[in-house]
Image (spheres, protein in one colour):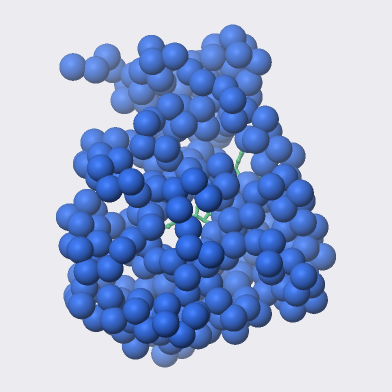
Length: 296
Ligand SMILES: NC(=O)c1ccc[n+]([C@@H]2O[C@H](COP(=O)([O-])OP(=O)(O)OC[C@H]3O[C@@H](n4cnc5c(N)ncnc54)[C@H](OP(=O)(O)O)[C@@H]3O)[C@@H](O)[C@H]2O)c1
């Protein structure tokens, strides 16, 4: 299916912490988790070849192998382009980014095999490669699409100028970047402006700051953030994570968060807050708490 701005679920399910980099799910736990997400009408699962040191796609794929009926109900997003140094890839001598045509195509073949699927719904280039050649990337995308192996393409962690360059060679569906109260760069560096201008969906990784926001507050700014979250939470009867999702949703570019939790209860909580909005001033109360001072 060719993705459009309106066909994405309101939240994407991140898989980074489901396997060896987090909850270390068994196949049964993956299956229950996937089914629960589908029951909640969330069908977009965000992978990367490297998650779990190149093991998470394979673990997730074991569920599709056992339950091929699930494949038609879910959409698989995966990424390529980071070469990690790990015992699972002894041939990598140094950590590097590689967006050469040969690496993109080879990585897709491995992901397809690991995930037990014939096609990837959305392939993202995980990080910009300093040596990337847009022509070569466009060629790789054209071939993958023609072969039916990848239906849609996008990027992650691209600067607005890198996005603009590649988008002029080949259409891109999203730029997946880090956006949260703790990482506000996309609001200021032109990323969200560019998404609005081009009708591109901005997808946000680590929307809760990787869970950092909930940890014991050690700095004045984190104490202030927790205070404001608590005040707004009491006002609207929302939990802190629900307030944080409402804060992201307030931006008119239509940010779609990639959830990092491995707990279904927390995903339900996220969905329950979908109708909640903050006022313009409440949005700025959180911004002020995060930057630690009144804006200029
Ligand atoms: N493109 C990229 O470069 C990139 C980089 C990083 C991540 N990602 C993607 O983005 C997804 C999300 O990233 P993330 O995991 O950093 O997202 P996140 O949602 O900001 O953080 C998730 C962490 O926060 C914890 N958490 C969530 N709600 C909580 C609560 N109410 N109280 C306490 N702790 C809470 C979770 O623990 P529990 O499991 O216990 O809830 C988990 O450890 C990843 O899975 C991956 O798919 C992409």
